[in-house]
Length: 520
Image 1 (cartoon, one colour):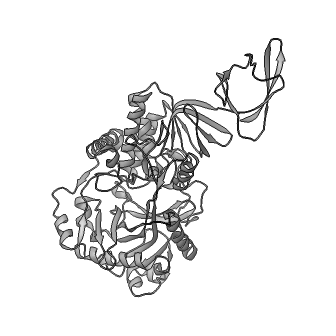
Image 2 (tube, one colour):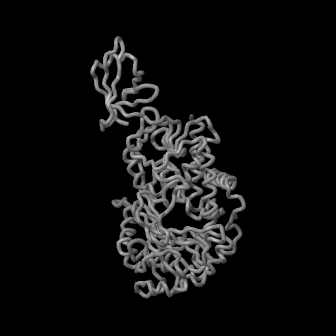
Image 3 (tube, rainbow, N blue to C red):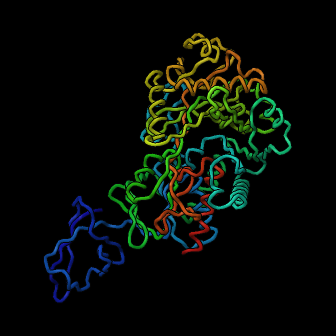
C-alpha cells in the first residue's frame, strides 16, 4: 500500500494521519515496529520527532511482510533452497514467490479437442508454477559434470557431484523410490559412437518420469508449506537493495528479507536481465540453442534407451565443424508445446507408467550459437527464429525428414500417410523457410550420423518439429558462494546462466541454503 503521512500536534507528541493512494516512490517504510526513514532513523507512531516540523508530509509504502529469507522462483532451485534451509535452520522465516500457480492448479488448456493449440495464457502452466518448467518434463536428473552447466567451476567437481547425489536421495525419499538409475559406465555404446564420429557423454541418469516427478513435487510441497510461506501468482516487479537486506515488490505489496535468493529459471531470462541492470550486476553474454525435435518409432532407439534411457550424444559436423547434440530424450513419450515469453516452441515429455506411454521416442537436436562483439542479444536471436515459425505455422511446424531433404513442404496429407504417427497436432510446413541454412545443414548431417548407430533415424517418415529453442540467461557474475556483488543476494539455477538442468539447479539451491544457514 502506498500513501501519505502527515504529522499533527497531540500534546507533547505527534499524531500521524495516513492517506492512501499516492502513487510515488516511497521515502520511508512502515511496519509493525514503526516507521523507518530513508536516512536510517526509526520512530514509533507516538514518538517525538524533533527533526521534522508540524505539518510535514511524508510518502510511505507499507511493508506487507518481513522475512529472514526471500526466494524468488519455485522451480527446482527455489524448492531445494527452501528444503535445505528448513533442514538446517527451521527457526528462520522463509517465503517463496512464484509467478505461476501451485502444482495442483497447473493445467494447460490444450485438450486436443476444443483447444488444439496454444492460446497464450498470461502465465504458461507448462513453464511456470511450483516445480518450474521441469514439473511436466520427464523428470530426468543427470548426475554428472559433463553437461548440465558449469556449477562445478564455482564449487568444485566433487562438491557438485555430492550435492546432485544428495538431491537424488531426497527425490527418492519423497516418492521416487523404485525408479531406475541408468549409467553410461561400461557401456559398449560409447565405443560404437566413437567409431562413427559421435561422442557419448558420461552420466548417471535418474528417470522419474513425468508422472512420478509430479508425485515427488507434490510431496515436497506438502512438506514445505507447513513452515514456508508460498505466494503464488505473484510476479515480482522489482528487487531493491536496502541498507540492510532486500525488498521485493509485487504490485502495491512489498516484502523484505535479510537475504534474497533469485531462482527465476530459464523462462525468466528477460526479467533476470532487467534485475541485473537495475542492481548493476555484471553479466556475460551466453549462448542460445536452436534446432528441432525429432520423433520416430521407439524401436529405432530402443537399444540406446533400454540401456541408458538418456543418451547425450555430440557430433562435430564436417561442413562447418559446428557441434550438434541430442537433448531431452523421451523414450515412448510425446511431443508438446511450450510457451516462453509469448513464443510457442516445442519440447518433449515421457512417463514411467506404461499405460501413458506411446509408440514413439522423441529427442531434440540442437546447435549452440555463441555470439561475440558487438552482438549480445543471443536470446533475441533465438526468439526471432521462433517467431518466424509461429508466423508461418501459427505455432509449431512439423515436417517429414524425407520432404525436407527433397526440398518440399510437408502437407497434412503426407503427414497423415506417414508411418510415424505424430503425438503433437502441429502445422505441416517447411522448416527450411525458418531455420538458418547453417543450422539446418548441421541437423541433417547429425541425423545421417545417428543413422549409423540407430538405423532408421534417417527414414523418410522421421518427423521433425520446429523450432526448439533453449534460451539461456546471461551468465551472471557470481563468487564461489553463488553470491552477487551485493552481500546476501544470490542467483541460482538456470536463471544464473551457470546451470542448465534439473539436477544442477537443485544442487545450487542446496549449496546456497547452506551458505545462508551459516550466515544468519
